[in-house]
Length: 159
Image (spheres, rainbow, N blue to C red):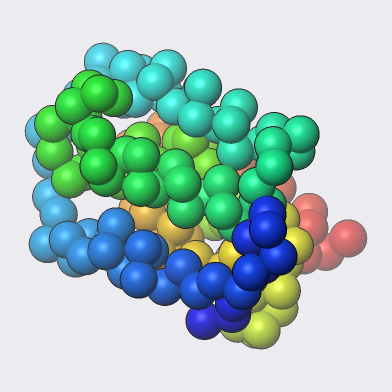
């Protein structure tokens, strides 16, 4: 994993934080999440998304990305999160409510291209964010929304 300078110029690797956050992803069940809970998670994610997208912060984008992970991981009840699935979806909505990671992955046919575009957009390549978004798109979005995302990917591919 790349090392990124923090806001003081130190080189840091966030691999430990990211791996710790996602440690239960493979065994997580997303069953039982209803539309009311998803709306609550989306609403809860808005201030975190504002923090992530605030370029006036003294932290770089990667630091903000990992800070949001750590905030959700260390204080899930403070965000109304009661399960691993909710934790992961809150993070996904906080970082990427428009599913840009899934779109980037869909438009690229080489992993190096995906990595480069994600690093440019998010400051970091996070394959597990792609996995989360693709799962959410497949299992939670309406057919209309899935088609809109697929159409956008096709436009990008054939531009």
